Image (spheres, rainbow, N blue to C red):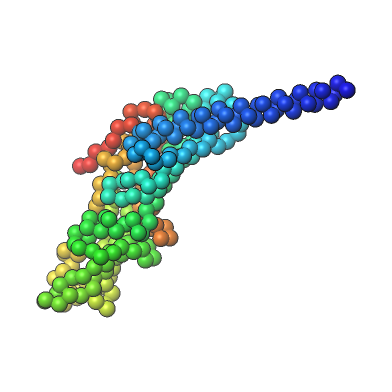
Length: 247
């Protein structure tokens, strides 16, 4: 009879341990989500989600930190853009005021959401923005000697000195598609080259924690994706709470 009693008691203890692990994990995830949401100045009503990975929570907590924490912020506003932000943190200390070894971020903006940034991408009135291949294409009209022609400006995105940068790499005028080099050499449209082929930049440093840097910007599928990073910064520290600055 005693072995059965011990088995039942053992099962109850295991169940209690699992329940306790779930409870304290949930509390810690909510604390981290609240800390990140506050640092990013996420508007009230936006749900910030945090998930603690790795082994059992209590074992990780006793070691002083967590192996991995994932944080999701939907509809995050970055400069003129609105997209979904995902942050992955590795080796997060239990004390959020202590440095986290590594933070990486992925900020994805759909092509539909890119339309609000069209004036900053082209400096002209634009009717729509789409993603074609590796380019962000801003479409509108241009007046040439009193006639209106369809204009499509293909922009290749990149990260330059912490800014979102867009370099014109193809131009669609009417039915004709030209590379930047072809536009400069075209006797009819060459006069528009300097105005159309300027690199456009959007500074977002003042919308991000000072500790986060913009590492890359590229097209992925039908989204514009920015990659962010930071090392040895505390989620609950000044570097994550203070905003960067635009030049």
